[in-house]
Image 1: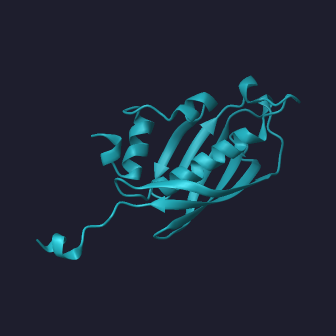
Image 2: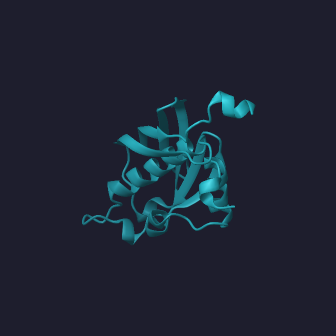
Image 3: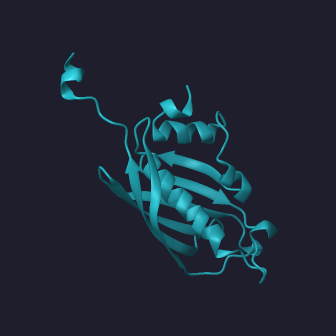
Length: 156
């Protein structure tokens, strides 16, 4: 089955199983999707040198990318085959510094509201070692859903 024919959750599960390759951005960042449920996803990443800014700490964009991915994929997990989304806004609140010494982190996203045209989600970035909150975020996504067949066509 091709990804275009899969529901959002089916395509995410296929990525997680390795049946389809992960998105190039995920590979570039070193992110791994480790959990998919309807309305919820979790990614992991271990901060390293490729994530550093000139000060030697993990660039805030790494946290933003993880959170955007986790929240966006939580939205994606609710979409039917042929559905898609795009991020309309992303707000990230950084509450602790992330460095190579932080060790592995988890980005968890979950749906807050899913409507017909938009969806909102929240996310948390935490340190695996002790669950410490590193950042939290919100997003609004614009949904593109496949056209529904007219009721008369369904009855035929």
